[in-house]
Image (cartoon, rainbow, N blue to C red; front, side, top):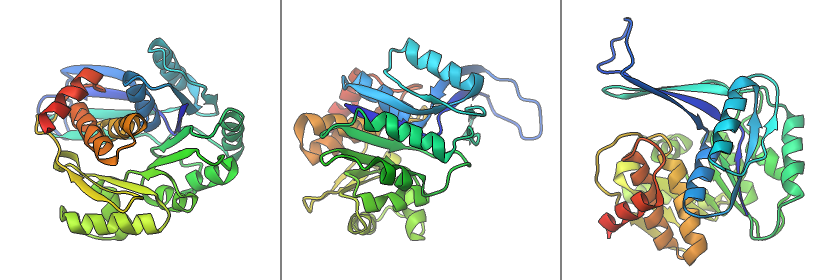
Length: 303
């Protein structure tokens, strides 16, 4: 089983605004409301690819109920814990440029995290996957993922994946996660360096994260592809397919799902990275998470 953990899901409100004007009343040319949060996106993408997945995490208030109603409608297996407060609303404005305004999140306590650990622990088996993705609410510390894994004490053979930024990612490295996936901006932030597309420098930084505990590291670079260093001492680079950017939200999550899906199928790092990069690109080229057929088509363009 693949379990995704979303500490801070969202109800994403998309607004299309033609030529938005600052300091003025703007009229939307289109709008939609969909469930968000990186772990939920990973679960939805894995489900589309045919993998058995269960989404876990925290929801609160009427926004949390709206998320549950939508993912239940999509028949996504889930077992969220209800907490105090309100699940956040993230506003995604699509105009000449993309502008995101993300809310803070619900009131999640250390006791709530313990409840989640107990829920997962009773079902977790060797060879399962646990994917921790995204931000945490402001009520939790930057060590929340590491603390969660401390308490979980996952059985040997469980594959841990972490897709997060800052301390959420770096503090989790002591648990030797199977995979981490910082994007290029997050990587540069961790090492305090200027944004770079120097593949050798990116590879060196990824290798440093590996020395700190990560078994495998993917650095996603959007339209510029992805770099990976593996626990088998391989380093590789895959170019992304070319296409029109429609919506970047969820591209990194679809990439994580694509890698896990293909690695489970083949056990081959390069094939998994190639499919993952195609999945991320396919997401960027569509308004919503891509179908399997769309991902496979984009992958065919990369061969």
